[in-house]
Image 1 (cartoon, rainbow, N blue to C red):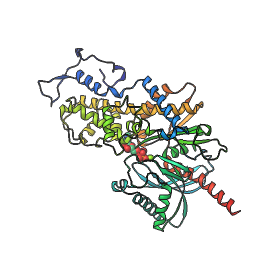
Image 2: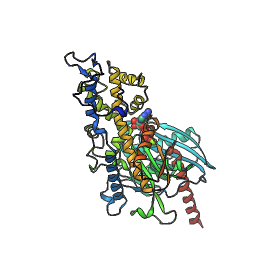
Image 3: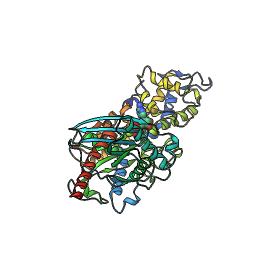
Image 4: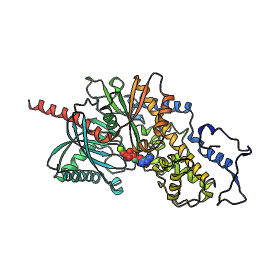
Length: 492
Ligand code: ADP
Ligand code: MG
């Protein structure tokens, strides 16, 4: 019997005699409590069953999401909406004519990067460097954060011998922002572990420019601010004209899509052609009004309780890399405490918050089922001294339950956007380490979206490489061209 094959996961009655299965004796289990593998598996399934949502459940989630998105787009309903559906002021997709040298910044999760990008005749050249943002800056003051960003820019420009140049910059700032123009955006709320004082409600481009001015050794003008979802969409649309959705599955999750101006009641820009604008959905906040509480598990609630932003980003916390490993850890810890794994022996690492990394889930699910090489390595890193092959199987089962729900939830979101756009062929650009490195995320999403999307829509999920850099340069190029045009007109 293969435990992990979905087709053999039919319910097994607890009182059924486990004829074909030998008694499972864990070295650490007391002899007077011999549990059969079957009983253990059944109990583990019981602890995990809330992760399984059927198609009707996903359709219900889609209806809720669509309803929340419509509230976000509506003039009267936006103020109270949880999904803000911010218009981005990015109206057209790249056409290959974008040219020039640009700086880009990518801030919004694990790494902060500075990039130098050259666009020429459809070609893109990129150099980049990652800079660390220490924890004390992530949770310090806003001025400290922007001084640090400006300092990293100065170091980067010095290293590339371009300090003397005045370069336009595209700023990929991946936190929920209300945009007031292509180069103006006020932060609504910090997410993903950032919490710098004095930035919420402020224009982050202004704060960045002030930090640049404070140091006097560099001359940078931020001509565009964008979300990483938008960068991802733009970067992919550069090569694929059917691309109208950008999706991030990394530290956090979010998506953007091209919407008709007629549907954007809050649009305050001009209504010239093209009559469309990219909407940054900020869908991570889906569920913040408790509309998803009917399927949240006790593990989800605990992750939320110990986060920096309790009650916020409910959908994101069930999907993205920052939280997925932690959900799995809580399940594994619970199962161990119940004596269903590792002979009931809990390690210090297993009890430590955030210690079970999301990359472990990718490693475990990449394992060859007979050997469990990665799983064994992970368990050793987690300080688990004694475990059986059956424990490895069960750990993998937990990881699969958690990551499959994440992939399916993201799929429900994408199906809503595909149905909204409703064109015969649509490409979805995807970026983020969770999507890139998890061995089955892509396939599970394709399967689930296929069952949820309206008939007549063909879709493709396309990995977008370095959207936050290339996409930022593409948006900056268009914004810079418009800016120069306006300056020329003023001089005339
Ligand atoms: P960001 O979203 O911050 O721009 P990434 O796209 O690199 O950055 O995503 C980082 C997140 O991806 C981390 O939170 C981490 O949990 C997750 N991650 C990193 N490596 C892997 C992996 N091998 N498998 C699954 N998730 C991963
Ligand atoms: Mg990123």
